[in-house]
Structure formats: C-alpha cells, structure tokens
Image (tube, rainbow, N blue to C red; front, side):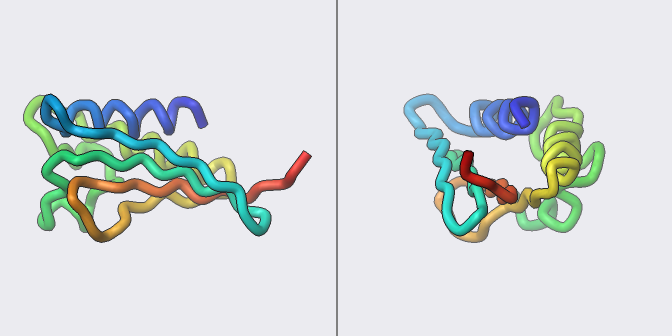
Length: 102
C-alpha cells in the first residue's frame, strides 16, 4: 500500500504548480478505510480518463504511465478499489479498502 500511496503522491507533486496544495486524508468508517489524495493542479484531461489506469497512459510529458496502473494493481491485490473522483479543482484519487478495527 505504501507504494500505491507513493505513486499517487508523486503524481500530485508532478502536476501541482508551485504554491499549490496537496492533501492526503484517511477516514475509517463502517468497516472501510478511504484514503484520498487531492491536488490543485490542472486535473486529468478528459481524453485520458477512459484509459487512465492502463499501462503507458501518461498524462504528462516524459511520464511512463506506469504509476497509476501499478497503484491500481496494488490496491486491487488488497481487496480495494482505486478511482478518480469527479469534481475539482485539480485531481482527487480515492482508495477504498476493507477495514477491521484491531
């Protein structure tokens, strides 16, 4: 999970202009853990959204397009989901995982 979060944070850092904001939030509720990573960058281009989590779908010049695909695979392996939320400004990615209190 740390690699998935690292990939989301790296994307946010690469797309947020100087002086922008990146926010990470985690909420445990009703046997679920939801983690969101939000930024105040330009958001995800509409034409990229259909293939956003596929390998080599890069949203920035020089990007490999592997970070979001790897993050999705890691989250799925833990029984969760990763998605891009609508709205803005910027981009917000949500990881939803099953959660048991200890």
